[in-house]
Length: 401
Ligand SMILES: Cc1cc2nc3c(=O)[nH]c(=O)nc-3n(C[C@H](O)[C@H](O)[C@H](O)COP(=O)(O)OP(=O)(O)OC[C@H]3O[C@@H](n4cnc5c(N)ncnc54)[C@H](O)[C@@H]3O)c2cc1C
Image 1 (cartoon, rainbow, N blue to C red):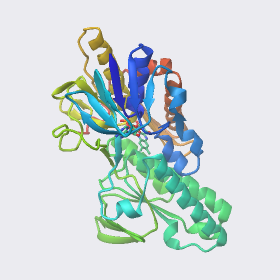
Image 2 (cartoon, protein in one colour; image 1 turned 90 degrees about the vertical axis):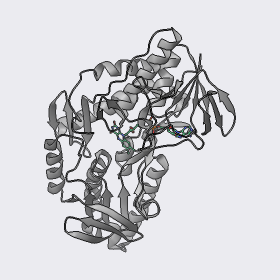
Image 3 (cartoon, rainbow, N blue to C red; image 1 turned 60 degrees about the vertical axis):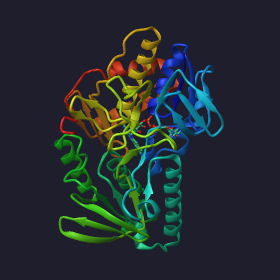
Image 4 (cartoon, rainbow, N blue to C red; image 1 turned 60 degrees about the horizontal axis):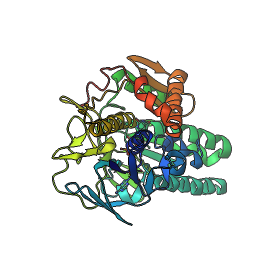
């Protein structure tokens, strides 16, 4: 059986590594030479993690039997199981769509004037911005609009990023004094609390953390438009023009589309429509996984994330192996039992089987999760144990629908 996997992110790579370990013929279509460790982008954007630690070359991760075609999938034919790429057309027995998500910069001006954080290119752009800002601070000639740092989005990425910038600002104040004292951080969140998918107690703790670190958190506030030197907001007290030339965008994602794909594959939110075993509706030989699908358990929806991408990938690999052996497929039942975030170095929050851990303990668990993933991709045997570690079901994300 020849399996073609499109996309070598968290989900696609896990499918490839698991099937290759079972000696299936696997081809990965992925334009990049390196697998991006996306959660590390955040610390790297504040200069706390070096750029070289944010990705791993596929040459270190893929079994020698796996063929890696360094190209974009341009057209998919789900009836004929054919994929056209920049370089060649492939025919598969099973196809796995794992093309992930991208930033949703839906507000006018956001694509042009904000700094998103989804790819290595985005990260490089942010690092370039900081280095020109540092030059200006050294010359003591810096427009104050550059020193107002606005982060849009109070979900996991926006919160982690704002916290990392608290630490960056502190380092700069020590290093440059003077003008750097004028750095001001704003975190703008559309809903009435930060981290709306986490328990309210966590949101409250994180809000207090930001207030203690003098971050201006603006809740119930929407960004209506971004201009070269300002963000136009609409909050509980009406409209506001916030002068800034440093606006970082963490305002949500949307599933990536393949350039030419058949009509009717997606739901209203652009997620690929799949059955409980991750096979695509109407296409039994095609699977979809990762941020391309909306994890569901009955009526309950979960926001896509790395952990669920990995768990769904394990299910997809299991199902392809089951099909090969003439056995029935299993269902992907999402649950997020253990999750953690860091607030810069040495502070964080973790939820472990219903327990909330704050401060250094939370941070340590976030680091452990990062190291576990890092080692799992380098050594697929550890990767195959990961779902066991995350096994216990929970009611976390209960309120997300
Ligand atoms: C800054 C940031 C921080 C995050 N932090 C966390 C965290 O702490 N915890 C957590 O659980 N989740 C986190 N996430 C979310 C997590 O990274 C994603 O849920 C996860 O990467 C989804 O995996 P995926 O395989 O679906 O997509 P991705 O990992 O995005 O991989 C998709 C791959 O498909 C490739 N691709 C796209 N189009 C094509 C095409 N046409 N042809 C071939 N290949 C293609 C891309 O190059 C990419 O390599 C974070 C995300 C970001 C952006």
